[in-house]
Every structure is written in structure tokens, then in C-alpha cells.
Amino acid sequence: MNRRKFISSAASLAVLASPSVRATGKNLTTSSRNPLPPVKTSSGTIIGQSQAGGGRVWKGIPYATPPIGDLRGRSPTPLHYQHSPIYAFDYGNEAVQVGLVPSDDQKLAGSEDCLYLNIWSPAVTANTLPVIVWIHGGGFVQGSSLDEPFDGSVYAQTGEVVFVSINYRLGGFGYLMPGRYEGYCNLGLEDQMAALRWIKANIAEFGGDRNNITVMGESAGAMSIGILAGTPSAAGLFDKAIIQSGGMRPVWTNEDRLIMQSALCQELKISENEIEKIFTLSTAELNKAFINLAAKSGNPLMGGEAFHPGIDGVVLPDHPLKNVRPIPLLIGHCANEGHLFFEVGPKTLTSGLVSKVRDKVGENKWATIQDTYQRSADQPGNQWVIDLFSDCFVGLASHRLALAVKEVGGQAWCYRYDYNNASKLGATHATDIALTFGRPEGTPAPLPWTPQTHLLSSTMRASFIHFAIHGVAKTAGVDEWPEYDKDTLHFVSFDTSVQLKQDFLGKSRRQVWENVSIYAV
Image (cartoon, rainbow, N blue to C red; front, side):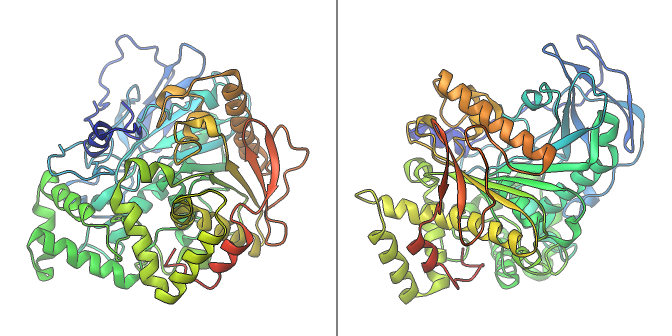
């Protein structure tokens, strides 16, 4: 069952809080498989399998040495060459999961040995093909490339691209393992870069073009990509980016990062002088502390987001928005992002994020922001509150990143997912995943897969593939997809019909955020 599912019931929250354990893929046999010829890589010889519907797949490829034992809490290290074949038939371990709704009785799921990737390639590749690398979401605390919708065969079987998905460290293991070196709060980000280095070094052996790599992700995966676009050490690892419900947030200040380290020590009842004791604790003991921190995250410091990248002077020397690179960017979000969270939680996020922004901007500015959203609301009731949260979460971040890329000489195109039939809650957060992968059964709410839905799914996917190939946005239904800029603010609306529209934030709402700190929202 896909852990990113929402159902409007209390039972669904229990599912979100307690991810199920996945079987791992330690591949030792070729029985009942359709093995492919061996592929030589920097890690060793890798054997995948052919797919019944056409195409080739390699699952559970290790891209780094497992970050366990003495490597716990350290940057990912290259995998030593494996002299025995790696049978890439099954997915590798997912990362240790915290859960979007932390629970005292949450069972341990996942493993610290989680640095694996998966590759789907067409059955025959006469030439090297553009590469799409998928980075999953899940609030930096849960999710994996194993999740139901993220089967890359739907892309590879077009014959136009090679598709890759990756796992990376999550929760405190990825973003709050202190003590061994200064970049501890960005281990998950470093894992993503390590995967991209492996892909760049080896993807030609799988039919991919190492000089035409597009990173693509949703939610925390999209936020990771936004941050990577402004991470100096990620320069040259990818060529284009497709961001779905993300941007260059959230990012800890250096001061807040240190406060979080102290909070973890308090949770573990150790002094900061005894920080090395952390590395002697079991996975379950550490994750319990991380779960407890997440449960307390609905305050102005954490803003409902206890684990994520931050300024450390090593991986992120400054806020990534100050170092953004001029890459081709396709960025979009859902029309009603926040509706999901207000319906099913977590409340630590819906209340926490707003309290954090309020604390950062001050009471006078906050009063102005609230008044602006109330006055410009086009629906009655508390929809303006959901709109405000949605813009704090991804709307403003999308706008800022698109303009930042343009300002440094890059190209940016924007879209909004407006398909109201996406779920019972409309076009809310994560409901676009179904159409991205053409898999209605693996979504936050299973869709009636009507001819209209199928057509929109095909249209969106074709747009993403075209961008990955050419680095220019194009879609059926619109003669020309203009770039996003501060004067015209054009974006494409993916709905029952595809249309060109302007200004997804609205003038008054855009203006009220001007001069607000990038650390506030």
C-alpha cells in the first residue's frame, strides 16, 4: 500500500503514521527471472531483467557504501568495486521512516542501509537517450522509490528517455545526525548528489546520455531539487529540472540548525559534550527520538517541518536562492495544495508553518498578510486560510525560484495542476502524481480513470518528456508556452482543457510578500 495515500478517515492517519516494512532486494539468484546481459559499471557488473511489456529494468543498484557502522552520520562514500555480479532484480531497502503523522506506537520501518537506485530503459537504444531522475517526496521523513506509482516503465517504454529513481536518507538520519562533521544536517541532500554522480558516471551503459540529465520530483523531492539548483557542489550534476510542488524551501538558518541539535540532545538526555554517544544507539532508539521531535514540531522554530536541509557552511554555505544556477526549469504546483493537509493532517504542519511565518515576519506584517488574503478570497469561509498556507508551503516558493532562475540568465516555465476531478478534495497536494505516472491506483485517492483523465495524463507526461529532451516547455492545447517573468507571469493550466493563464498568486498576494525574508517562507 502506498504510504502517500490519503483517505478522509482516522484510519488513514494511522496508516500514514505507521509505514509498513518492505521486503528488501538482496539479489542472490536468477531463478524465475529474465536476466539481461551484464552491464559493466564503476560499482561492478550489474545484471537486470527484461520486462514483459517491453523494456529493461535494473532495481536495487547500490550507488554508495551503506552508511552504517563507522559510516553512520557521514557523507556518502563511493562503493568499492564488487567482484561478484550484482543481481538487480528487486528494489533495495527504503530509508528509515518517521511518518507524516508521528505516533508513539509507530513500528520501525526501513533501514539505514538505503542508498539504492533503479533504472528503466527501452528494450533497444540505438542512441543515448535523455535521462529523467525521479526524487520522491514525503516531507523529508517518509517515502521511497519503491512506492506504488513510481514505476518508471511508463516513461522508458515510450522509447524516448531512460528513467531513474533513487532512495536517500530521511528524517534525522538524513538531516539531523550531529557530531562527526559540519555538514551533518544535509546528509540526505548529499545522498542525492552521490546518486547523481553515479548516474552521470554510468548511465551511458544503460542507454542514457550523461550530458542530458533532468531531475524531477514532487513535494520534498521537488524541494530538494530546488535546493540542489542553488547548491554549489551540485553544479554539473544535472542539466534541467522539473519541480512539482516545491521550491527552495525549507532551509534552516545556521542558528536554528544548532538549536535543533540541542533539542535532539535533550530528547536523548545526553549533553552536547557527549554527542558521540548518539552513534552507539540502535536504529530504533534514534528513530524514536526523531519521532518525538517531529511530534513537537508544530512550533515557530520548526514550523511543522522538523527535518530538512540547512545552512552548514559546507554543503550549503548560504541560502540556495543566493546561488541559483541558470538552468532550464519547469515548475508547477496544485491549485489547492493545502486542502489535503487541512482535511487529514498533520496539524503540526498546518498550524506550525503558519506560526513560523508569523513569528518571522512580526505581528504588524502578519496582520497585513492576513487582511490581504481575506480581501482577495474568491470563495467564502476559511478558504483564504488554506490559500495562505498553500502559498507559504509552495506557491510563493515556485514564484520566487522561477524569477530567480530568470534573473541569472536561465529559462523558466510555470504550470498549475487545476484538474478538479483529481480527488474528492480537488486538485490538492500530491494528486498530480497519478497523472505524472499514469497510475490511478497508486495515488492519494484512486481516480476514476476516464478518457478525459487518460488524455490529461498523456498530455502532462508528454510535456515532461519533451522538456527532458529539448529543455523547452511545450504542450498540446497551447500554441506557445511563454517563459515565466515578472511582467507577464504566464503559466499553463492543466485541466479538462489545457489553457494559458496569468499570475497564479494574484497581484495583491504577490505584493504583500515582497521584502519578506527567504527564511520566513
